[in-house]
Image (cartoon, rainbow, N blue to C red; front, side, top):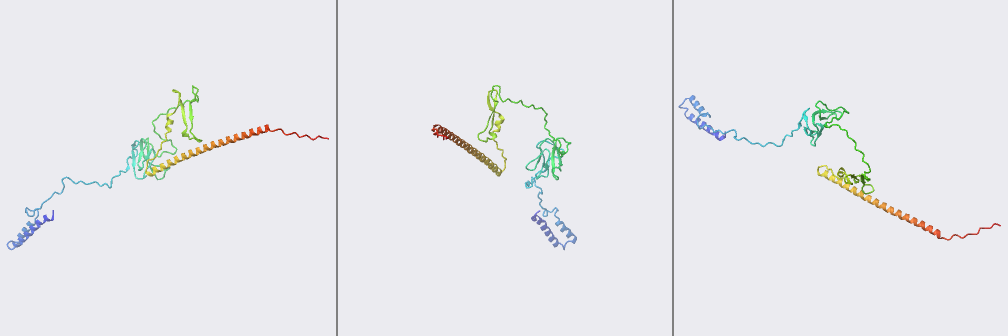
Length: 301
């Protein structure tokens, strides 16, 4: 109720008090007090003292915007001990390494621990690895306990059966038609790279040589670059440039060495030819020279 609405009963009470004071000589004191209190009563039937009331609750309700400063991160354990998990299930979300990945458990870049195999979750400690760290692992059998004993047999669940692998029959070097079954072509240069070695197999259907499919796949040089920030990309780019410069330098040195070997071979051939020429000339001069005159031997007396 506002101040303006409260003024009405106060004014009415004041007017009643003044009129009661004027009529005090004609009426008794008790009657005057009853009249004054009757006029001061707000909840009475008098129209002058009745106030106006408003609704205290809104009809449609109030819309409040949710505070986005404290969005829940939903951290903590998502799977309890002995819970069944499949590969990829999140076991624990954390900030930092409060729990460390143990047997058959991996850790993401935001320190989230997830299952790598199908099994049951185990929370444990391993003093052999670290005295204070707590680990989370996954076992295949629910009754197993972690950590496993030292030098124990490794537990694996592959769902495979053992089979005997027969060794392939040795391939003959010469085919039935009398030609070799394998032809090897090496790379160029004094020291060819093993990647430049090409091995061709004889095809019995067409009697032609062809490289195997898996060897053709190894000829493709793929660069596995880790996706990251710009600094990482520049580091890989510099390393690739250094590798290319090293290959070019090696090819240049190989070319210079081969040219030097060719020049040395030519120089040795010329020197050999010149020595043979001198030997022939010396032999021809000795054959054309006159025999030396015979000197008389002294006679004894």
